[in-house]
Figure 1 (cartoon, rainbow over the protein chains, first blue to last red):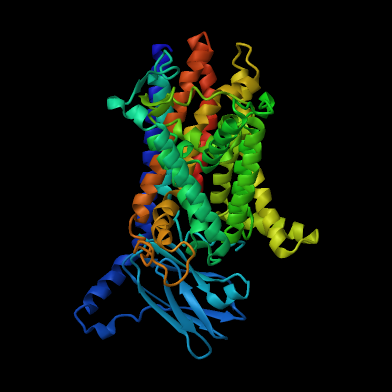
Figure 2 (cartoon, rainbow over the protein chains, first blue to last red):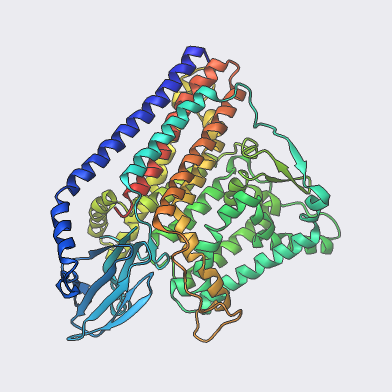
Length: 150
Length: 457
């Protein structure tokens, strides 16, 4: 290969590196831009931080309703970040056992007796939440998915 | 969401972030151009040096007692798989059969082969039993017993390609492929088939080209620095085991199945698949298939489709290489460059099954204590051990996955470059032929990254 060809290839490599850097650079900017509306909210949070903890916003509790062993409105994805406390409730119209994979927690659910999950999100990944009764009945047991981002 | 029941793998990978996808792809391209600019002008990997292990270790490790012991362990494990599959609890991840076959064996032996060489050859239960029976038969006959049939040249690695295809069909397509009982039945059927084939063509001839798992793991073991020559274990240059892969018929389809099946396993978790799959399933339901069978037919279409896409991309690139000149047919070129896809196949397996092995692989220990999944059994005191899902976090998994893909790309590039130098008399033609090989490698590598980015997104 000639000298000029080698230089050409090296130049291409550099050009790709620069292009990738620029693409990633603008990506970061966008992220910052979407975050800018944040500070005022953060400010109010800091102001109330001195107040008793009872004033903290109530935790968001996701709710999944099971009818005839299937989740109403399809399979939802419950999102959490690592370190959060995950809270969700599964309500079923029949006696059931709800299993959260990975964390390996099984709770009873039934009419008037929702399964209340309260878990510290310390494992990252996507986990299936399944109905034991649906599995026994040979139906798709998937109730919802839990997604824990790092 | 359309889904085939997967009893294994309770945790699904988080998709890699977009930044990592772009930087991974950029690194792949940079490496490609840097490689072209700086790679060596003389072939280095063909007929690389080999040195036996010191202190007589090379002979000790391949001695008859070690072979017999390893073979016996392999046969024992095959027996445990069949026994636990048939009589154990019919729950995929609470039964030794399923976890051992799909995780410990199928995924776990890949890194072992890459690190330590052709480990499976030693532990292969079919080879061990075949050799034992051949030994007894020869004693009884009072002389050597030649195989009744000569292994046909045209058959090449076709049986292995078909075997891997059927195994991945059981794993990814069949709705009840993870039922322990079915795993046991599959193991029995495959054993019977393999022993009949060995009786017809000879044990070593069948192991060499026909037995799917031998061929599969042997391909990965060629990436290792350990190689057996003349009954002795020795060391060779990294990557120098692949150029000696004989270009037998069926090798290109084998690699297409290997890369295609992993691609499809990833692709079946992406939004594009979830969009088209229900339509395909509806088509099969209109043909009066039950919903379950329609779903399986849909996944079969996906698996075959992914394999064909990989095959066609590679053959297209070889048409490009042919246009460079020097009178090579594209079939010849496809056969002579195919070894450079082995590291790409490894990258696919490593990136896709990393967390499955690290998480579900842990079940091997607990199920070794309790192979049937019965409550109360605890042979080695490890039965109750839960899977530790914190052994690798999502972020480190991402970096390892992208790292494997980039490394596989570099290794494939290196092998193809070395081969081109051997094939073409003129260095100029060698370099020009590489442009086409590079394009297909960049496509395969980018596809691997894209799957990591889009799966579960």
